Amino acid sequence: MRRERVPIVVLVLAAIGAAFFIVPLLGLIVRSPWRDAVTALTAPETVEALKLSLFASLSATAAGLVLGVPLAWLYARVEFPGRNLLRALTTLPMVLPPVVGGIALLLAFGRRGLVGSWLDSTFGITLPFTTAGVVMAETFVAMPFLILTVEAGLRSMDRRYEEAARTLGASRWRVFTRVTLPLIGPSLFAGAVLCWARALGEFGATITFAGNFPGVTQTMPLAVYLLLETNQEASYILSLVLLLVSLVVLVGLRDRWLGSA
Amino acid sequence: MSLDASIQLTIGPLNLEMQVTIDEGEVVALLGPNGAGKTTLLRAVAGLVPFRSGHVRLDGKVLEDTATGEYVPTERRPIGFVFQDYLLFPHLSVLENVAFGLRSRGTSRQAAVEIAMRWLDRVGLKSYAGSKPAELSGGQRQRVALARALAPDPRLLLLDEPLAALDVTTRADVRRDLKRHLDSFEGIRLVVTHDPIEAVALADRLIVMENGRLVQSGTPAEVTERPRSQYVADLVGVNLLRGEADHGSVKLASGPVLAAAGAELGEVFAVVHPRAIAIHRTHPEGSPRNVWSGRASSIELLGNRVRVRIDGEVPLVAEVTPAALKELNLVEGGEVWLSFKATDVAVYPA
Image 1: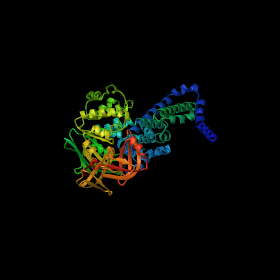
Image 2: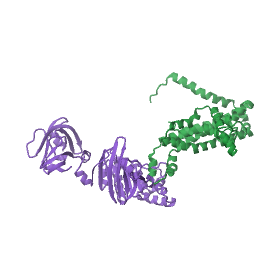
Image 3: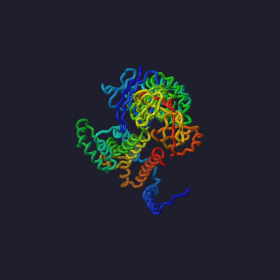
Image 4: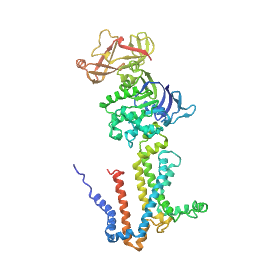
């Protein structure tokens, strides 16, 4: 087979581009104090941060599924005035600086916030600086990924399968759960994984809205940042853990769902 | 016990205005060219397409009536629908596909599996119960789709081009099987097709539609013997002319007068079979009363005969043997004369 010659300029620029990503990763791997890895990973505050991160990110994913799938369904299936505006608003956090998101959450759900003051005075519920606040911050930032992925899946599925199910007597709920959801399974899974990975890495909105209390709101990224000041080597190890998780997610997604050509 | 549908709707370029009644036990084929609105009509009967005005009544019960606003949603209509590309649920096994309708309508899991297995046995696919649809051949998928539609015991079975997705080699076999299964089903059956062979093979009665309108309805023999539209005439392969009859002649709309033995009075169709038309290179002398000149615009070999399309005063198609064509020394564009007897013209009221 005849091979197309790749222009040299493209090769050089592509190599620099790739190195730009690979060198920092190498740095992390090479400079990590592997001898102290076990100590750093088993330190109580690390374990706490890891547990909290897993709990909060999985909760955010669950919340994203419960609230995001209906939104995606509305966007994909129902024509209503202001649909595009609503979609833009609900996916804004994808481009919003997370710190801004955190401030916005504070102004809405903080003790003196729009909804927060009412929650506080009526139910005695305070959200900021609690684990629930962490979940909220992560959901706020991560759910848009799920909404967009699931909406794309709903739009590209063959709706005639739903019609076929209806001619077989299936109620709307049965059509949705037994036909629609399984058929968009790949999108649903990809959306959930993207949402989870984004939630796991969330920093700005979390620290703004939920603060940085070990065991309560200090997630892995926060712990890494804090350790950078006190125990650099441990922060390297934790960074590496987060890196590995991201890598596994990305590779897994590519091979299984995003269909590497 | 019957289906009575009257539907008017507009979707894009399609302006559909159809009235269909089907009696208990009848198999009716809806025949027409692509874009005639056949599938749309079927989907409207199923409640999948809203219509502007009209009604759908099944066994006297109203499924939809725009005059009274009544509407029974698709999932509560006693129908079975076989889609053109079958639309078997790809994530479910063959058995689960067939059991889907039963489960949807509240049959217990165990009973649904039992009934679905019986259906799979009937269509000869019991051993494929655990397979996924993707593992089946086209013909097998068609049988699963049929079993899935019939398993919940519908009153009305709608089939949209049930053989179109199959390749030609398997089509004849699958058609025979389909005919058998259709015959054993006792409700009302409505099959959409654009293939006249399929229509004639499967149906007791044909409804021909074009551009959203009914053009002809009757038994396959009635329709093929007395085409009432160019579309049907082309399907059957005969020359269809229309004009004003006047005791032994028909004055065609385009001007020429046709000698036709059976013609009486009034607006009529006249059919001339291509085999009845003789081709000559010079003006023929003899008994045939109809003699016209023209130009051979296309020559097409079809098995053991040659179809020659002749453009002239009256455009006609003649059929001759390859040997005769050779003797005539005729090529496309050649000047010819053609003749046929007045007794070879079939005339019936328009």
